[in-house]
Image 1 (cartoon, each protein chain N blue to C red):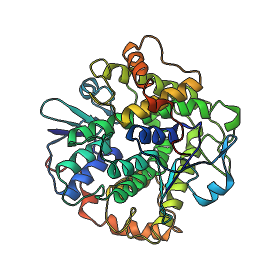
Image 2 (image 1 turned 135 degrees about the horizontal axis):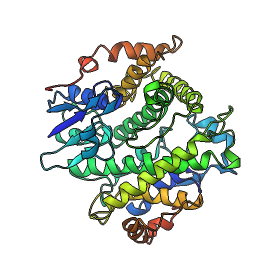
Image 3 (image 1 turned 90 degrees about the horizontal axis):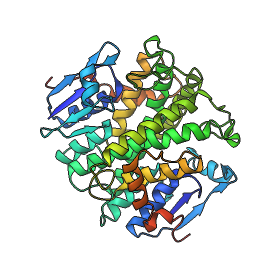
Image 4 (image 1 turned 60 degrees about the vertical axis):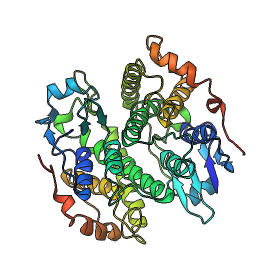
Length: 213
Length: 213
């Protein structure tokens, strides 16, 4: 198998961190080229997104969380997606909220302001989707909701989905990394969020980009 | 437990169909009021979205797929989210694509054109998020990609994620229902998609809104 990624992008990082937490090494290839994906990769994988896991028989698994779910089933030790029904549901809920409010919020701001994405407010190739200035305000709303919801949740919980580190922490952390890159750091008043960020960003997985590349 | 929903909305329908396919009855309450959610519900559940499952101890599980995951673990018979690692990953991938390209595409068009959502391009309460006209074109792009990707996938597969009906079919079907309401029916040229739609919309689950309400 091989995992295709693009080093600076937040979505592949969700999988790279997941593998680091599992202690699983997978052959990898960075298919980035400047601010786009390499043409040969786009041709080979029509959704034209990263990450993508290609199995030895050619089967392609896309979408970061689908790839994580694959590895969760192969390596159930150190569960990151829950064991009981309630754990699995709670983690899934917080992971989706991190994506919907956090990662999507930062992406709406970043993609609609950065000059390199002038004609690509979504990952399109061979056509144009111009930036939409109105999405910046909406992205800011999402991001504020993300901070509010997660700060409240982290008041009584060590990690995002409860007492254990899970994939919900990973998506939330990748959001913060992406936000930092976009100069949108966590406002100081969200002290529970700040405490959590200090803890999870000190784990080795937070520093890892590319295991066994 | 009780499942809070809103009859015309596509996201609660994903859970209602899931329960219908499982043959599981759950107490329910419709918390819609005109084109909004009832104020008492919004106050009780701050993300202010439906569906939400409240357990007897007051635990709230939001996000349609997190609720489905909860019921999948409680009632593993007739699996709708896969059993093997590859099945689980494949279903997750196609379910997310149905959401990201399909349901989000229709929502971008609907929420940014319907007069009732003039100040609510996302589900906000107590504040304004004005419609963004540029999202209509982007929603159309997403929806076209949805039809293209799924029509190609359904050429060699009976159902969206392979030989068995899964939750990926449910999200795709709820997309079509929402698209139909928005006068965005499946273009005739997507014949595999049309064939699939005829089959899945004939299942009893497609007609069910509210079991044991």
